Image (cartoon, rainbow, N blue to C red; front, side):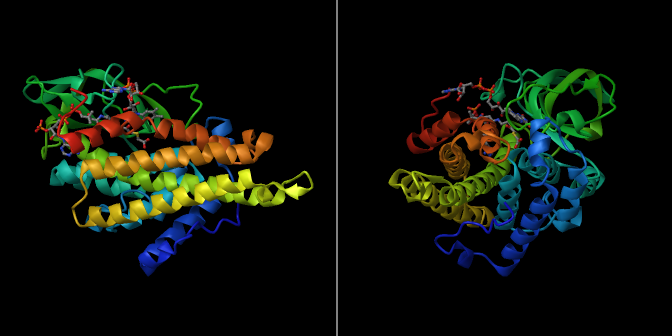
Length: 390
Ligand code: TGC
Ligand code: FAD
């Protein structure tokens, strides 16, 4: 594992600046030291290592794309992508912790929050002093968040919040939750809910076979009194959470490249070391086909996210552009994890190697932030102008 040096068949590094390469190598070193030696134990024991939150803050993994005046990194979108790639090479659950904090908690507060909210929350979220989560999905509304029933009433000097969210990354340990709920007119707004508010609880979801080192839970609101200054004033409607999803889905498109590279790297080395029929298994054409296909798909995916990153920086990337990359790169990584697992034979199912963990993690990644098929429908809508989900 320590030998990992990255996959760059097409010299894509030529498209990166010196700063990009420095950022990538600092996060790669961080992952090598703080995540890779422990991740198998954390995942096997279903343990979320809370101490990683402060460490992520120190290394600049939270909100790299948020301006530095609020504690963010003030970096471009390629840098953000490279950070996600290196963290997910370690583990998709660790990348979830970082991308939820940066894209789904800091981003909406930065984009739609008041100056007071930005000053109160962003520096602490950036440094890892606070952990956040993002509540959109409900038990009966996953792919169709506009049907949500979580709601709040205006009580004069405060709001009263009721309802429940499900499948929320970071929720059991979060200090704050950005929650999407409907007002009395059915309009969606973002509210900042803080741990300790009466009637607010975050039960943990147990027995996951996927993202075992990331904590997932519910958000339950039973007549929670929300101070009026905790409503995000800058934008309402489904478009507000969807803008956050654009940023997070972009990070996932890069992140899954990291998981795919780790699987490819492991498969290539195993294929050269493992002897069967008196030869390295890498000498057999069927194994070479698998490796050649992995390298081809990784290379195409790298070019895709690099160009998308440029479009993000220029403000030209649309939801459909992002859907194409999220869908393609998650599927690419999942296929590579499965093929790499095959190349490792029986060894591939053990915790000696990262393949099975990546493979199981990616089953969540292909589902969250819009399922594989929902992204097809977003593209279908873009192509035809007809929304198939209506
Ligand atoms: P639709 O009619 O398309 O849109 C409703 C309104 O929203 C506007 N809008 C956007 N605005 C800005 N940016 C975007 N990206 C926008 N997308 C939509 C749209 O213009 C419209 O505005 P208006 O003013 O006309 O009302 O909405 P729909 O209800 O038909 O839904 C469309 C659909 C199915 C594509 C969408 O809801 C969807 O993407 N569903 C998937 C749900 C999803 O991705 N959930 C993710 C939850 S968070 C999560 O999974 C975190 S995992 C984190 C981790 O651990 O990494
Ligand atoms: P459903 O929407 O019920 O979909 C089930 C199946 O039906 C899917 O295959 C889907 O593609 C298909 N389907 C649905 N509608 C259509 C259609 N119109 N046409 C064709 N097929 C369709 N959410 C958050 O808000 N915050 C989080 O932090 C968060 N973290 C998560 C962490 C994990 C580990 C997981 C597993 C999920 C997380 N989610 C989070 C929720 C995630 O976004 C949802 O699981 C996802 O949006 C899908 O919703 P669902 O599970 O209800 O599936």
